[in-house]
Length: 218
Image (cartoon, rainbow, N blue to C red):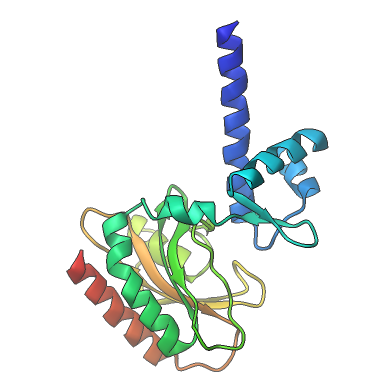
């Protein structure tokens, strides 16, 4: 009897963790119906699952009912690669303010990249949020490709930087540089912004300088 309960509990936990992965990988908030389809479960079960995740702060629901990752994941993320995040925090804050773009630190997690920490420009009229805990495939987006080239340099020769647009979030562009630190997983330092004319070389230089300082601090 206890074994059955344990199996049921493990299945529920697995569904909850999978739900977080699905929500985090989505380009925009997803509906409960979409989550049902992704998980292959009944709508009533999905609602119970979402309600529990909401109660614990792992999932948030917007006015239209769309699901996105909750702020609680930011708290958990602070414990991952803590020394790296501590070294990066002042740098991404400074980059966000100087470049008036959202700056963030991302690292490898299996075949994906996950955002560890981010900072939004303090005085910009319009910003693009990049919530810690959000993730996407290494095969798309500037930070994904930067990390991919560190993981598999034979098939994907490293570049000094990567550019992308509309690959992860529609209507959003990104610039990323490698952040390779001994003892840490391959990482990327990046900015995202609404597409416009930018001085790519200047942004890359500032990202590279920040990456160098972060590496020296770790």
